Length: 95
Image 1 (cartoon, rainbow, N blue to C red):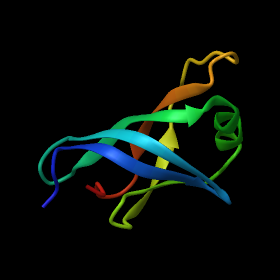
Image 2: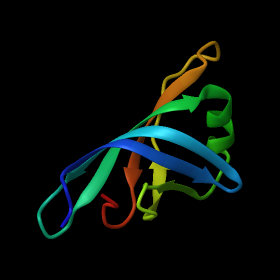
Image 3: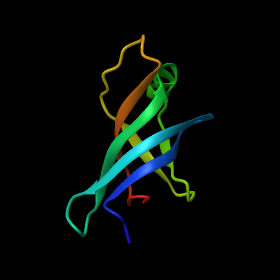
Image 4: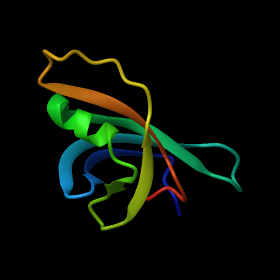
């Protein structure tokens, strides 16, 4: 059964790039068609630029489940060391 929320560690993957993140995820939608979204914190700003160039970005949960995610518009500053990125998830929620 899917929990409606998850808060904790995850791994953001894009090609050979792997970034440990603090994930805050939630399920939304009707019972028969769950969708999920969230915010990923602690992404090094310089790595965020590499993520934007990737066609396939995935989120791996601590239990090994992995799903494709889509990065949403983000406001960041080049001077900030870390940034947070809103995402939407593809497929069933991995939590």
